[in-house]
Image (cartoon, rainbow, N blue to C red; front, side, top):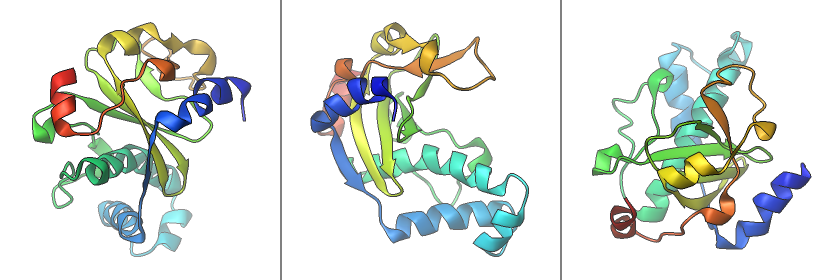
Amino acid sequence: MNREYVKRILSNREQFENIKLGYTDTYKINNIVLNFLNLNSMFELRDRFEGEVFLNTFSVKVKGAIALEKFLEIELIDWDNLTPNNYSSNLSKIGLEIDIISSDNGSFPIVERNSVRPAIIINIVGTNNLWICGYASVDVLNNNQSDRFYSGMMNRETKTAFIGYDKLVKFKSIQELFKLK
């Protein structure tokens, strides 16, 4: 694990809310991807070119929203009308223009260089264990970035890594998020 990750993220972990996802959550994610790709089993998904990459990319996005649903006791995901290829993780369903940005353990979340919407930052620290790290205003997102921790080759002009974990605001309710917005 990278020393900067330990310094910036793990050193703040006591401030994060820990949420565990269950088997039902994993089943929903897998099932929606299988149905979208017209496949019958996870074996078929693994045999399909880019199938597992598609599942993993979608999982990272949607797991953050599931964790927030559990934490705030609200519904953010319309599973009946969800299409994994264009899913956008945010709080617009409850009237808040706040993005949900999730990242895998060991990596920094990827943000827009010029963010225009605040975000909730979430780290996936195990298959079904997530940390809700906090709320980042547009100012915090735009002033706490580093290209050094952005591993992607695509979109380097528009994307970068967020490193401002010590600037995140902790919240406990939807009401607090409405006040922060």
